[in-house]
Length: 515
Image (cartoon, rainbow, N blue to C red; front, side, top):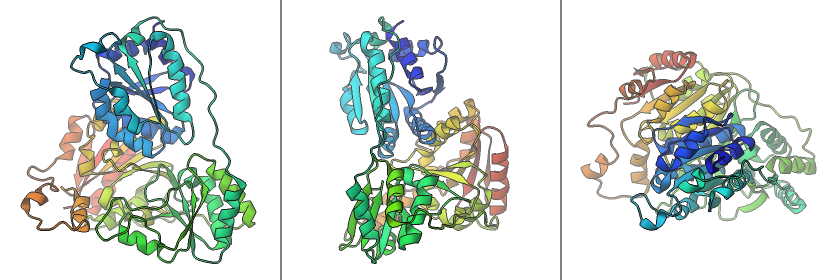
């Protein structure tokens, strides 16, 4: 058994059953080993950023890592943006990167690079296997590192000779630590803040936004009168009928400041202190009032749900009545297509138990109110801010949960970063319906141009934010990669097309014209 096969057997034995891949010459022994080992599904991506984003979406839904397989430093570089997003989401990923054989590196062949240095900013753990005898052991350590709470990218670099030389056979994954319970003082401090009788907010993130965490937070809010808010961007939220509805801190700084105005206490349940996405002239970086007191109930690597349970007991809120959302979707909108009408129709059209992947960017900001009473669904967002995650995230979610429909709300500019995702969706016959929001621009940057106070804006600047001349034709792009697609220009057409896409087996794209 060579090193590559010992690694694949270690991955499968450690519960890593999917590999999102864009391999090259150095990874051929790993590729060959796939035919000798049962239990590993390998999914080809035509761009490394699709592979890394898909691994993120898969792990968010099954709470265990997928593997990626990338080709040397340039292949890693192509996948870095979505590894950055995975790192910000604390998503477990076993990121395998091939390298030149150990004895070949000294010759500085064209693809030679410092892979470890490139991987470190997005990885919580990095290791280069020194020889084939260590590959399985290193693979087991990578799985354990990826799964260490709250989850992280673990990058294992595999020189060519470590893959083709004789290995040791599979190695068991070492014990993985669980989430630590919070200290008693953290619970008492949070209870004291919420009992103070002053305006307070409990900010939720991570597992606090899953069903049990939401119910506990709602009981605490009902008992103490505090408000519930989620972070602006979240790894995974459970929403819709039967769940507790929670609004997010708005993205625009002025709106966020208004939402948090007058708050005296912010209790953090897995979330970070609310900060602006960017710095803006004459606007604060911190979004809370200057006299607001922050109390950390639980950090994102701690047992957040247990902390909420403990806090509910401390406050006498464990049996406090709560009122989840009821199924009361709006009627589908008619007439012109705009952000408000799309939001209304989505509230009516989201199917039961759907996974909604949200990269709607500027148009998608207002979709939450109209979807809170839709069918029960899971909502995934981009936590790292690097666009181009939506379509790959949908791939991973669809492979993780083949019995659940996936609805990808995708902006046109973001889609073009990883448009190759459509080919993988078609090849794997994934039930992903993409609502492509086409406003022929980087619309969010038009507003940011004003927000940062840019002066003397002319045609050259505006051209950098414009996606016309020529117009992108997403129907043709989708069909060219094997995905059925149609274009809609009214809400009546939108409603019929999205329903048709959701009912059609395999992928489907609805190009929604906003201008």
